[in-house]
Length: 366
Image (tube, rainbow, N blue to C red):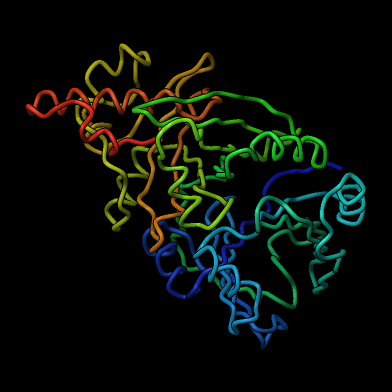
């Protein structure tokens, strides 16, 4: 079994058209397919959006009994299906189930004039499902007979290139067993482990990655010995494990952030003091520090190079799922060094303003 990458992500949402409006007008995705009862998708409305190598399927249940409606009622809008591209769905499905995956939907074939697509589903983490996808023929045909193509307008954005990673929060005590599940069942490798402490908060983090290197999950578990923070907030509002944020790689983060901010995307702000001594912390930068400061773009480094990153504010009423834009300049890690730097910058900012350090530290959480 070879997992070649993420074929698409399916979000279950309360209103597919409203969600599509945000991803289209603000983030630069373009509608390229749609389906519903008239195309054989009983009880749901789905809209397919794409940008470069990223495909998002937005699905709304049209009845209270539909899985999408059930998911939204419990978790709110969020990523419910992580679809994995494989060479042989039937073989991969049988192998995964034999290794211990929960069988959810056996292989099914969708046939069109120019393409044939085989899909099957197995359990993932929490209520999130993994859909196995095998494509034959025209790779641009998403799901023949179910998702009808829509011609995208000219000038489609290419600000974002591909899915870099998914950050997944799991309840306390479930990190190691989740990692073991992906190692045993999916053949992923544990490539990075760390314990992060800042401002009285703490979390454990492990990164698992497919052998192809094309699918990466950053798994986060709160440390219950520390004070509650962002991970606990997500687990409470999401009602369990799920995708906290979607990391999207860009080749030019300065241009991408400037464009998206101009369209109304709200990004997390960074204290100005964070940029004091930035080059001393991470090395010489190609981008002007003043421009990074203006856009609140963060910079971190590891042995392989630098990464530039920024997080959006959540677009959901429960304040759960949000996006990360990331540009990799050689770095292969995920910017954990920024957590401490952000906290220390906030402390300096408070001290300069005459406030008591630590009082507002909750504004920067792990």
